[in-house]
Length: 307
Image 1: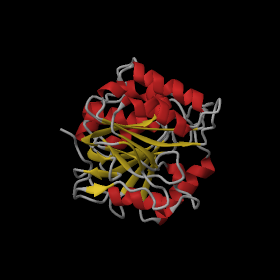
Image 2 (image 1 turned 30 degrees about the vertical axis):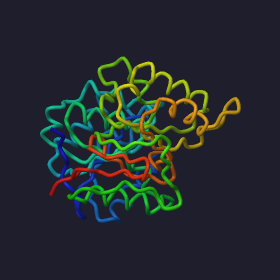
Image 3 (image 1 turned 90 degrees about the horizontal axis):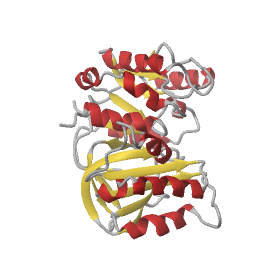
Image 4 (image 1 turned 45 degrees about the vertical axis):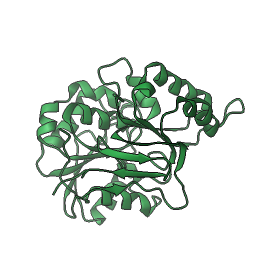
C-alpha cells in the first residue's frame, strides 16, 4: 500500500542533501537563507558542499547523507540541492526498510526523478516531482512555490494539477484513464533500463520531460522506451515540455510527439509545465490520478500527505 508522508507546516525542518552533481556554495547558501525566511528550519547534510568533478561525493557518502535525513525524526522534507548526474549510483546503498518506516516528503526533478520513482517502488512512498534547492532564488515564479506548498499541505482529495493560465494543457489523443503516475526526466529513465531500478509503467500513467537535447536525440530516447515496451504497458502518457530542445533535421518537439507518440493510440496529454520548465507543476509520483484528455484535466484522486 502506498504511503503518504506527513504534511509540511511552517516551522518544520528541511534536510538538504546533494545526491548527484555539486552545486556552488553561494547557490546553496542562497537557497538555505530563502527557506529560513519562509519560516522553515534547515539541516544540512555532511556532504552537501562537497565537489569532485561532476559528482558531489562518493555514492556511499551521498547515500549516507540521504539515509541520515530519513533517520532523523526532526526532518519532514528532504530537499536535494540539484540533479545533474549520478543519482542512480546511490540506490544500492539505501535501506528501503528504514525509509519505509520513516516516510518523508522528498522533492526534486531532473536526475532526482530516478530516486523519486525508486522510493515509490521500493518503499511505497509518494514523492514529488517539484522543487530543488536551486529553485529557492528570487527568479523562481511564485506559481512554483504555490504549487509545491499547496500539494504538501493539502490532506484532502481530489485536487487538480494545474498549469499556469497562460500555458494550456493539450489533449493530443482522447481518453479518460486512472492510474498511478510515474516518470520524470526522459534521459534518466532510459539510463536505468536493464537494471533492477528500471521504471515500471504497467497500467500506470507515465510522465516524461526533457531539457537541452536536440530532437533527434529525444527521438532516440523515446524509441528506446518503446522497444522496452514501456508504452505498450502504460495506461496513458503525459508529455511535459522539452525545455531548450533544438529542432533537428527540420523536426520539432511537436512534430516528434505527433509522428511518434500519437500513433501509439494511448491517451496522451502534452504541454504540462513541470521539472525543467520555467513554471513547475508539482506532480505526486506514485499517487493515483485521473487523466481526462478531452477536458484537459489532471486530477489527483487520493491524499498525497497526511496530518
